[in-house]
Amino acid sequence: MVTTDEYRDGNAILKPMNYYGNDGDVKPKAGVGNGSRFFVMNKGLTYMFDAENNDWFLFAKTTALDTTDATADAADILAGKTAYVNEEKVTGDIPTKTASDITIADNVVTVPKGYYSSQKTKTVGTAQAAQTITPGTQDQTIDAGKYLTGAQTIKGDANLLAENIKAGVTIFGIEGTYTGEE
Image 1 (cartoon, rainbow, N blue to C red):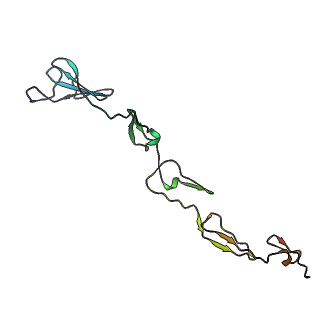
Image 2 (image 1 turned 135 degrees about the horizontal axis):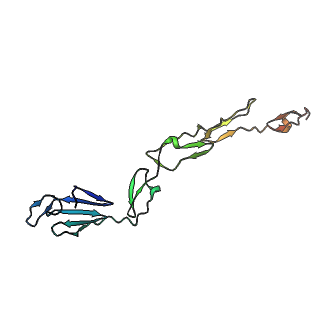
Image 3 (image 1 turned 45 degrees about the vertical axis):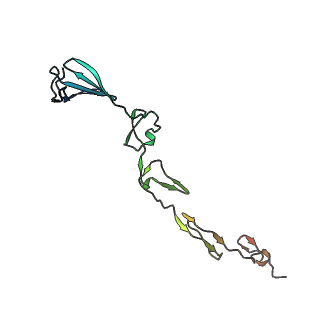
């Protein structure tokens, strides 16, 4: 005998309900044995218990959305969110990420798998625009961490020839051969 307002058994819910009698009047819920009816809802089927006749019968069948052709799995759904796939509840495991999760090492930018709520920007270095470098008496260096956004031209000189450089002197890798005589 059910004496509570609701009884749970696994996925089924047994609950006393008001119902309409044959005369159209609403009959209040009551305990088993005095004409009340109970409904059990389980996996889309609703059964009714008719206490007057002490019998169960199928009251309604709910047509659920067919999810058997779904192809998502937990790896396709955001972490903490749920969905139904192939008639099973699936909890997602795609992590939410921020710009701080993006890493840069040398010339490699790593963007980990995850959901980014908006466009993320990460600076990978300082830009070096096009420039022309003219050799001089001091070394000229393009700093590490710069990326080149234009052509870098190192000036040459048509007169940088061995015969124009004093013998025994090397300039930019060219050893001179000039001895002062023509």
